[in-house]
Image 1 (cartoon, rainbow, N blue to C red):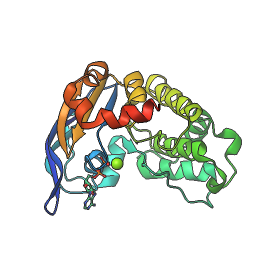
Image 2 (image 1 turned 120 degrees about the vertical axis):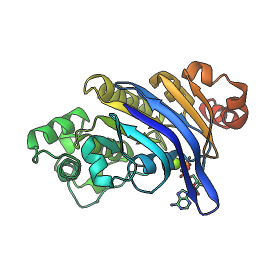
Image 3 (image 1 turned 60 degrees about the vertical axis):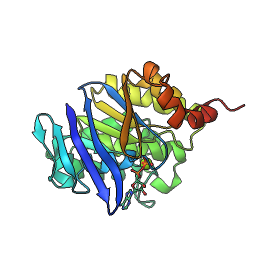
Length: 241
Ligand code: ADP
Ligand code: MG
């Protein structure tokens, strides 16, 4: 469904993404992990058309490199951000409908907005300003707004960041339901290895923009190169002593 072919992004002298290739299959959950500054969020920025770059990104068989962000959104690619962003005075319902207008070529669809509010478990808060939501609520809202664009693929950027065990469980459940019930393909950048091994079928590990390893998460996370470059730190966080 989505294929990156030798994508490279330089910011001045810094090579943020270095000759990276990967393939996200339709209907699957694909994970990306790596230390801070590895280039993970930049990969999302390239896929969504925010920067020019070298290489090719194929979505549903067509090269999307060079298309503007709104065209890429209309093709069916949606994302969330590392830090939940919203207009605090806008109601939850309005925020979700902004997503619907931005991404979908079809006409404004209030029934679908309703469905997404229910799907994300936000129906009881629909008339509240988004500024009233707690962290989990803000994350659900960002996901519901992305879903309102009717994406074929949803890219999540560290959705668990700052969440406690209970919130992580709720978000994992929501992500699974998006994948299974809505049939949306998912890419997830995540720090928590446990989340990645439980959710994903394929895991790509990058460091300084370069692929370290890619494959079955249970195999990848046992690779000495991966443990050396990254997992020492992540495992310590997942398994506090
Ligand atoms: P990650 O999401 O893996 O933590 P990022 O993709 O955010 O990493 O960043 C990768 C590298 O690219 C970092 O060194 C970061 O400072 C740099 N970078 C990201 N965006 C920009 C930008 N717009 N301008 C200059 N440097 C950037
Ligand atoms: Mg990032």
